Image (tube, rainbow, N blue to C red; front, side, top):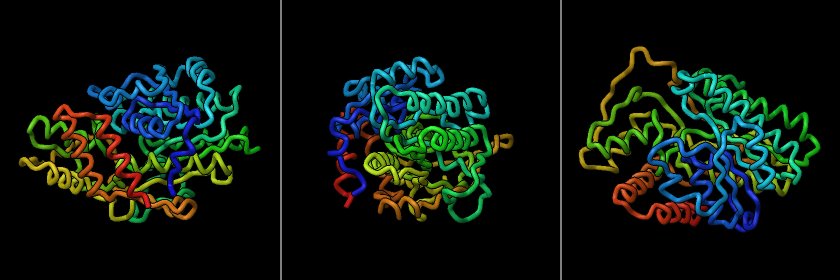
Length: 355
């Protein structure tokens, strides 16, 4: 079993970055499981946003605040008195990190420090913490095999590097302040996530959605780049599993890659082909390379053997299913349908197929 929904019933959970794409889905899962959720985040970063479309704030205590504002974060944290913490707040875009490196480091590194300080000094004891980073934390040599958790951390661009730093900060806090086992802390390094409700810039699936909406060709900068794509529910259920298991046994705390199977590490062009095929209506893509574009990795894969071995975890939806469910969500949204109901349907579908 990757997730025991009964475990979260009545548990006090604190989520940073709850207004984002992944945060909104995570809130929906936890509310459905009966958790008492407090979210702390800046307002939703896109318009439209999944947070607003799904009325996520209705089922939780939603605090609008900046992860860089330590005292504001501490106030919200102490009021929530969480037992379990998920840290998702981030500046998550590679190209944006080239434009604003200082803000990227401030959010991704010092934001993590501020949260860990809240945990360290909490009046009510915290039991389980999952810090979300990225598959891009590794020193990427673009070799054909997946990176393991013990490979060197040294992201190239400011986003990737700031997440590498976040891993090191977390490791230091574990050694310095949580070595007694009173707080179980893990980091989770997830691959590229897709799914309904992502409207961010500089991401393939949101670009597909915008192209479908405008009935214009989809433009790809680098159709040959390879990434470990997975549906958003895959890593979220893995985070929930890690938090649950280490809450009950601190020996499970560690660092974990969370990615798809080998067959789901595909090129950007292949991902776009799948979306266009599912969407129909003559949607197609074309390549427009940028001669002066900032560096982005061409090849990146994760080895998730540790997660599979320790927890018996395995991905549920392959890339074809992930794209199909993304298109289903998008059609509901474009038709003005019931977004919370569609999210609940997909969560139930994922969960019931877990065995």
